[in-house]
Image (cartoon, rainbow, N blue to C red; front, top):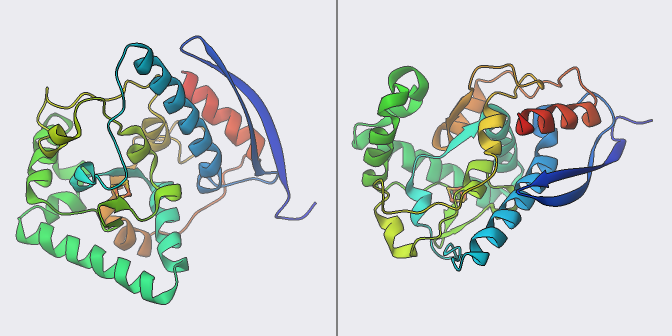
Length: 248
Ligand code: SF4
């Protein structure tokens, strides 16, 4: 077996009464949480599909469309494994595009600095208590700083976007997303928030404290991070651990 060998895991989940079946490839060897992200994205897609079917039966529709980047000016939490993968993705882009994306990261940090928010963004967990995060998120949105991956009001990394972005789907009119104040935006209700499972899943078991950071600091954070360590768990076991955490 080579280091690149993968195995296909077949598993079923019951979500809101619907049985979903997934076949997803994971590394056969001990894997990092970052390497599990393709499988987690597949699960996330299925949870959303079930949720969309449910609201459509109630006569509602998801109003999110390509070209509407209103929510992409919010503070976007990403897990540490996702931040590492995003930084690797940026480094792998063709030079011209890579430089453009990196410039947008720098511009976003400069705009947040000018708005007096950057210190809190850099130390989000330390300096913004959980009870104040909603208020801070509204201030962040008011600063109007686009996500560095936003291109022509669409996500420039759509297949690789973070789980929290995948989970942000709304059934209220798109125009209301220009004001994310409580009560105006109706979110698609999901059975499980995989983003929150991921925040605690850096150890591969779900015993970590919440470890996440704002996407906008992902590149500078990853530059000082020791890397993407494998967990002790082979891919299939790691996936099983994740699904158990999700079910819990
Ligand atoms: S990663 Fe993509 S979907 Fe998420 S906030 Fe940025 S542009 Fe929007």
